[in-house]
Length: 370
Image (cartoon, rainbow, N blue to C red):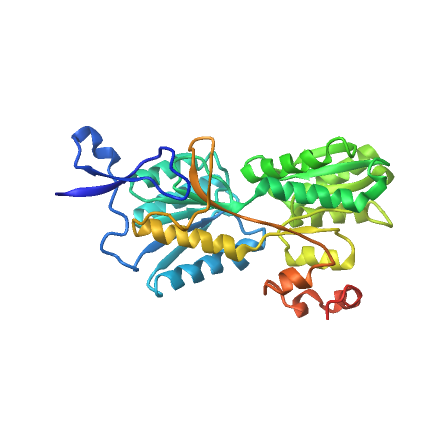
């Protein structure tokens, strides 16, 4: 009997992808037909990879090569990864999805610039028979799978670290909260997690949602906060990531502060790790990119071949538009000067020589990095 694979956007059971077989439909159903993903291709699949921006070092340095490596490993070197970066432009990313559809990729891995704006493009891909793996940020639309970190836990880890740094002086002044971009659903979760820890235990003097996560915007916001609150009244800064922490610390130095207040971060960027070594930044959140990238690659290869996700995913999440999305959530680590060697160095993210340049050699010796 002539059959074709058709995926649905209904809720799915944990750890499995709902896939059904249906006979050829009527003309009314013709626009909803999907191709039989991976049929006859074996390992020779084409994976579309769309990442959101290149200002944060992680995407080009870690995510892209790690996903490419795992796809190659899972397909015996026959799988192809077609890559594009949206450079923080949602319209560009939607066009990139269109291009991927035209190029007939077998599956898409998408880290959305804007989780809402991508929904229409996700549906276009699905209508073309291309399953979509939402990567790092939970995209709206009929996605088939999702992998990221426990993003509310990220905010909690940051908040707890800031409280630890402040100690019994937590209410002796005011903190500034520098959240991420409102277009990023993860930023909302980081913010929620941080507030769940900090509310009632510190005085929040100023709080910002930072446009496009840009360090220069965080720098401008921090300068405004110092002007409004008084530089001697700011005892700590919640920064949602390392890039913004860099802009914040520049503003703190420009204000003439002799002793910097504790500043949080995220992503364990090299510059952030070096600031931690130097005592300028209190902590970062280390997110092991390898397991996240490997999970995305495993899901993408399975979906491209028309296979179920049993044994690949470990939980489910609900997006605003799709319930019960099969998912893998990766745990995170609070990175301070005390565990750099046991985290980013041990995992091969950075070599000691990369961190401990001449500028940081003395500080590295102090924290035991040799």
